[in-house]
Amino acid sequence: MLNFSDISKSPDERATDNIEMRIKPSDKMRMSRAAELSGVKLTTFLRASAAREAERILREHQVTTLSERDRQALLEALDNSPPPTQAARDAVRDYRSRIANDRSRRKSERPPNRHRNIRSRQV
Image 1 (cartoon, rainbow, N blue to C red):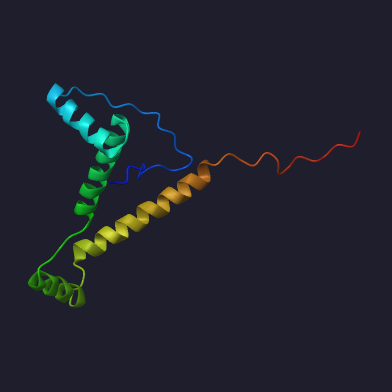
Image 2: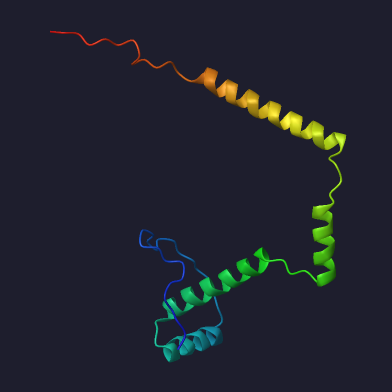
């Protein structure tokens, strides 16, 4: 029997979102029968099946498989990469300048710490 535990379930996450769709009666009958044979409710069957398929597709798109020739070409390019072009050096310089400007701007926009000059009064 397949494992129908919720593969994306975390203890602090509740199922609160809904998905609605129209399906053919014959598809619903087939899915209901499969759920029944698996010993789970239809919603459990659909949720687990969709989550499992989503994970498979995401995993498939996260992994790149190379032929041996392509693997060798990639390793060669990484080991013997050309020096950066002037345009690349300019882009890095511009990026660092923008980051530095953003940081200094954020510092100057901070409100003053009002608690720094407050003295306690004795009554």
